[in-house]
Length: 381
Image 1 (tube, helix red, strand yellow):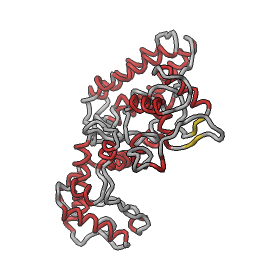
Image 2 (spheres, rainbow, N blue to C red):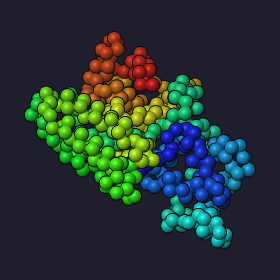
Image 3 (cartoon, rainbow, N blue to C red):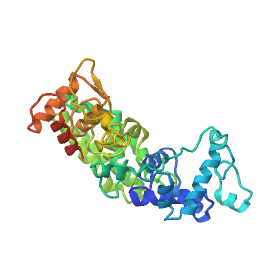
Image 4 (tube, one colour):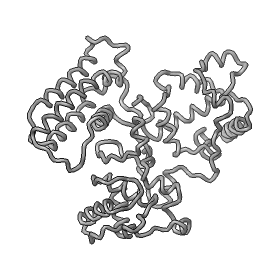
């Protein structure tokens, strides 16, 4: 994950505001974005872009980001319109201001954008920030939170472990299997040592003898030593690994200026569907979230969603499919149940629903009626 300074609503708003002002030629904004710590690349750019649903780029959203400067918001909309008419703008063509261009220090641009093959999307004027849309429909989110939150260093390491050595819920295994998995995880951690150093920004400027580099090496050694001891089961091994990885923030954060990281692409692309409770649980961009469904007008005011009224989800022939099915599957996953969030409700999904209903004191029918749906969403909020 790329390091990022965008970790909450306030830093996101500030970052987006500087970006808009830079597009209008503001030199202070350009200097801010050219500061190495504020530069965005690849994963971080996607991370910031996904969170912009909190600040839609329509007239109201732009004006808010620009501290109430309605004239500047109109300039941004004009720039957008000119680009979409295939007219050159500051974004696609160098200006005649040599001093500004020197300050801007343009990196190689996107030839598809410069050739007007990529347009600038026009955002509907009535589109609300996603958190406001959710609140209006009865799904408030924590104040200041991001739909897709950043990772800590320990969470990045946890993600790497679970990607390279996937866990399977309910998997049983005695000491022999646990020993094999522990050995594999020790090897994986050895490969990750250099990645940890790079994530902390210590590889290019800090010699290997520096205490900060040595601390990272010491952390890897401690974990590998712990993995050498015998474990009664794979569950015991997993618990030990999780507790050790959680300590990386205590041991290493502060040795670099990087404490938050943009989520890895595989995490955003897959929509957080692996059910790992130790990772950030964003409310807006899991593929099955309430946020996405409110935005699609699946959930909300019945007067506005009559065409997509809630239905009882049960096993039928052919199987029921849809966003509402995926929403419930995603809620089950985040409660620790093993089910695929594919939007298809078959016998496997029904069995998991029965487990959930039994745990909630509901009749285990395997169907998602109104009572089950409300309990699922209440627990998932």
